[in-house]
Length: 71
Image 1: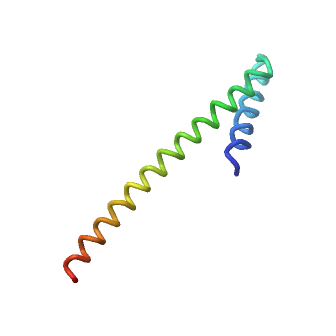
Image 2: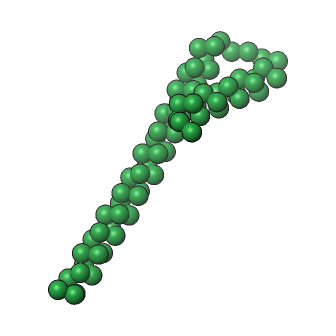
Image 3: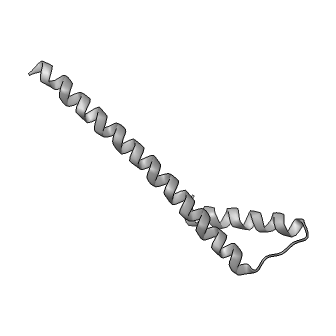
């Protein structure tokens, strides 16, 4: 699922919960909430990619080190 749509879906569900509780917020707040959620998703994704890149870098170094013993 695309991050943008996922963020909108979460904000929409939150809006449903707010309205079920008998409250309301301006429409603009839900749009801003969706942007904040999307930013959070992006941050989590970038952090996960960075961890993966570090693991790959370590693996490459380990492979190079192992290769030194076979040359």
